[in-house]
Image (cartoon, rainbow, N blue to C red; front, side):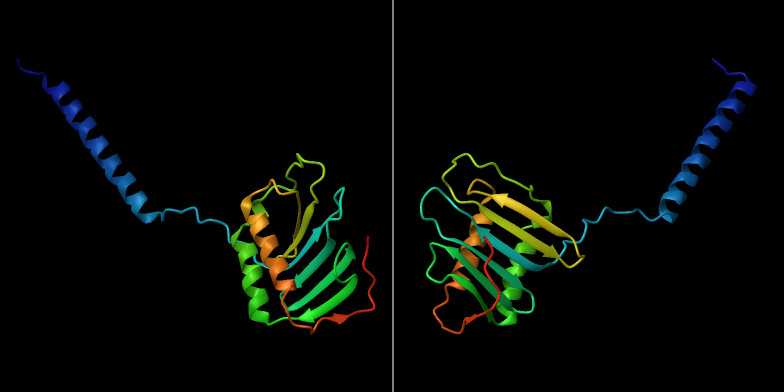
Length: 175
């Protein structure tokens, strides 16, 4: 069976047009760089304040502030060995390493509050300041992500270091 010449020319031109259009699209794809979605930069933590709150018993109530300058402020309120406000300057690299752990834990992505399912447990509140000037507050009572408990333990261990270079300040501890 033989196709009419006009139909044959039409199919050939249609095929040629599709080929040309395909080449144009291919060249556009090469000319336009693909934009890869890069993850947002992790904001760096510059300061942390951790406060342990009251329970129905004699849970220690205190707060600890860490600043990237190395300054650490401890405020003992109730049921602690030392009540009052004390300051100490730690090795800046040690504090920076701890603050880096807060950055790597992506505190900026955590919830603001984790439910307290046992009313007698003391609360732990974090106030984290980032290099971009933003702050994040998180309330927790042992039921949030494990990283919150781990970092709280690291802060406690840092403050309980066995030297006696803590200086009492005139600042009063807040209740």
